[in-house]
Length: 353
Image (tube, rainbow, N blue to C red; front, side, top):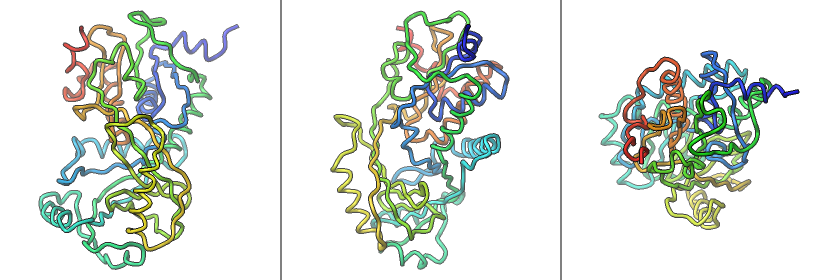
């Protein structure tokens, strides 16, 4: 007698590897169009999705420029989270604009110069003096608006419950074989496996770049949770009275464990920035599936036509994953084109070797 999971495994048209943000939205959109699928996920505690801050920020970098494709991506992505939270009957998304407390005169001038050029997202802060009881900030404040905060842990947990209830989740590692895979003639296998993709026999030639991130979880009971705060580091509302404080962007590292250097440096920054007491509760770290081009990998393998990928989101997974998961499903089901800047076919020559 086969279990319900085994039956669904045999009947699945699509096999999804990984249930981070990419795998969650990919399975959600396949579910919406009535496609049968099975998801493999080992439930590791410290993946990039599970320790990420959950921030959608429309501007980036010291030059304070628009994030790639943000005008198209953000409206779609915000709607995607709002739709999914209704389906799951949980709260997943809230607007929480970033208050940028300029750490230097140069950064203040850079913000002021960009302000008239980026009126969609950059704003002057009204009544800035209200923040003086919480922070030290000699160089003024700017605002990025709108920004969004995603409760990633709730998203992953609640969607996982749904997958388990419907018997379409296998909580074990998917064993990859090349060039053949189980039921390869019948199933399309889609890799949403984050940093595990670095070792994939199908996609390990892609220009991945290992990037480690660390953050502290900090108890700051008297700090208003209406905004996210930036001052050389980011303070992001977490659970209860906790705050996510980080992050680092390390391209060279020996392991993915939290480091004492980051802890000491971040505590020192908080002591300078905050006027109110705080307590360190936890210290987390993970490796991000970044890539040298800073553009995601989306689509089907040029040789193995039943092997696909949705990966390489770097630090933009919260915003890019819903958008490109939908684009990939539209490609798989309706044959619609994938954005050429994200389509993995741009590496056809490398992947065809």
